[in-house]
Length: 468
Image (cartoon, rainbow, N blue to C red):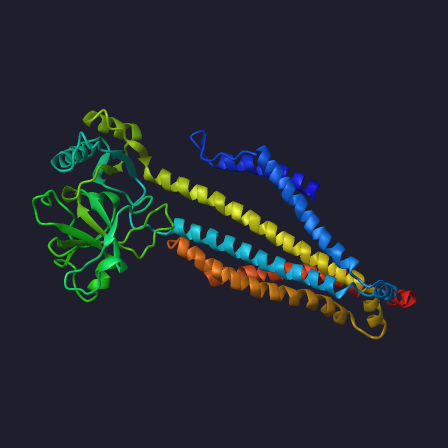
């Protein structure tokens, strides 16, 4: 066990270097994984204790056996004690169940993340650049000062060479939606925390810049200023939920005394790098002029570098640094690359679990065959066919595998539900993944049982009779 632990530490060191290399950006590691003395001691202690625990259990069971019974069984080539049989059978069932849960969990996560990255987020990522800045409260108090700066910023960005469109918002649908509020519809009884909506504040040109389609109505314009009636744009999911047979235009949401008239309906969008964002969330947008924020994001459509964006902001205010400036696609691709690395790690651990389950099944069934070699020979001497011997061994192993699969399927269903609750944005095809994993485990278990069964079918009956 200690030697195995040392070998595991060597492999972990190599895996560590690969993982840090894969999670490196601009020559700067995104994670730091150190093989410290504490990690070394813990791994060595855990492997040693595991060896002791699983080595003492059979020794303790063997010490409890009746010697006379053991001698009689040994003379006849019989099996071991029933408690040892039960221990071996329990190990097969446990290993198969855990391997199934590990494989199913890895399959659900990997397939869900691949589907998440391939799905249309509802807005155009290619050709879009972004950046973030924060307006100091002392220099840009809420109100006219913020509105004036935001207007100048958007005009400056639109005037840059290579820029097709530009917009400003309090947040972009890259990492998620920041602000949420209750949904109250004028004339509807549904309200309160049971119905939530995301609320984003955006400038004119926002939807055209991000490539979000307008299904009905119009986009915000310069006329939607702070001194004009409050207006709002909602997404298609919200419009369909409350006005399935009519138009949402002209309807009002908000609160009594502060109603906002719906002037447009746009497509649903999702965060491109956050599977935790549920896709069915109601979404709404207010004019940035009517709801200013200190923290703002810029979105630029066209061929423009991050340095050009930083210089444009610095020309307006040298004290305002533009952070995280660059192509949005690079940010999304980086997220997908990191999730791919996580997927490979999950797949590796799942493969290791499958290997251990196969090894354990083979070991227990091989032990069963070894203990009953003489009995199998006698059966064949008395007329048992090879297929009878094969079924005797295969049936035992596959029955135990089936029990483990049943327990593992129940655990995997709970795992899938937990995954959906943690990351609602992931679409997990649970039945297909479970079917594939069960088929794989059955195949591996069949091979692990077939090898000892084939050896049992080759027992020489005459040798067994001479032993008796």
